[in-house]
Length: 152
Image 1 (cartoon, rainbow, N blue to C red):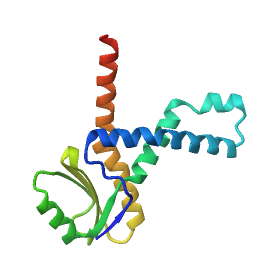
Image 2: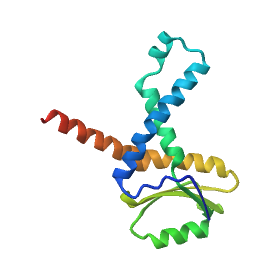
Image 3: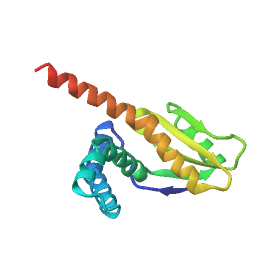
Image 4: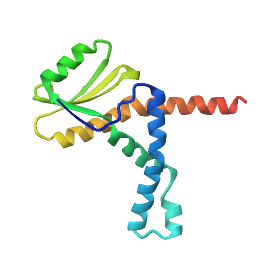
């Protein structure tokens, strides 16, 4: 089994902190991309919205997620060792390799199976792990924060 990436938050607070820390990098990436496309100030203001930067932050965060890559047997053994985890598996059960990311705070793991296209599987897995394990919890915390701001 091999691991790609370094981010494996043990708690939701740790995940939120890493997500927040990805913001400045995302802004810089978007700024440099806009500069390379020769946006003038007006076009930059019009086209580089908060949503654009947010999507870049999602990618920067997801790209850091720790992904384990191994055989079907290695993944099955991992699942057996973590019986309380909810498993979401994408792809076919009839292939030899699996990439997976576990979120301990959610007691959940997302996996993507593959035969030959490791890089594609890891990319798909990161997007799916973010969408299924992190984004909903970040949005829930945003809703809670907004409610607490209005109740003061």
